[in-house]
Image (cartoon, rainbow, N blue to C red; front, side):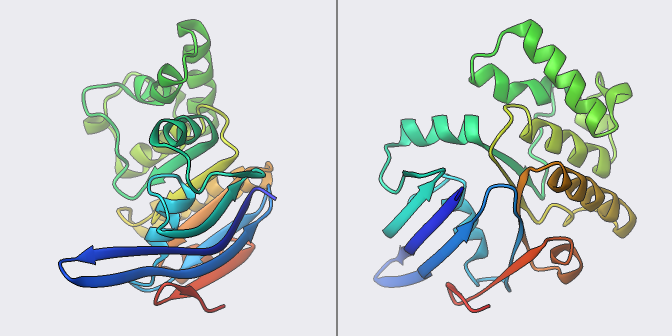
Length: 221
């Protein structure tokens, strides 16, 4: 079991008001699964993604990642886990504008202490995988939206993560480019990668092999 949560809860305080963004979520995801988290705005899907991706910590409940209880790990350990075990793809790409595509892909490996020669070879291999080897020297402002998202996917795979998290990965793309990006995720899932998509779009969710629906901070289907 790669992911297991038990009564995972997240409460935010807005002045004197408590907002229960997640309310006792039990979820299991096997290694190699292709899962979509669906829900309307405010359903808790992004909060759950942040907890599963170790970008935030739960108010209560427990979270096991690859068999280890990480619910109360200190920030330094969570940062190490994020870098080495989890790859992120965001709607807004989050590429560094001053760096070339190949330098963006190498960034997670820099933080993981991978040597320059190995970093470069791995980045070239990943850009080849996403069909962008010939755009390696281009900066983000020289790339289309689809190309930037492909670079983001390559960067997410840099440290061979156990889990690939994608938050509305086609949200800033036109429909044709969105289909191309989803075909790329399908291919990664078919290669045995664990892929978890967060989306409100049914056509995106339909690519996954299992859909988990959230409403008001709870899993409803």
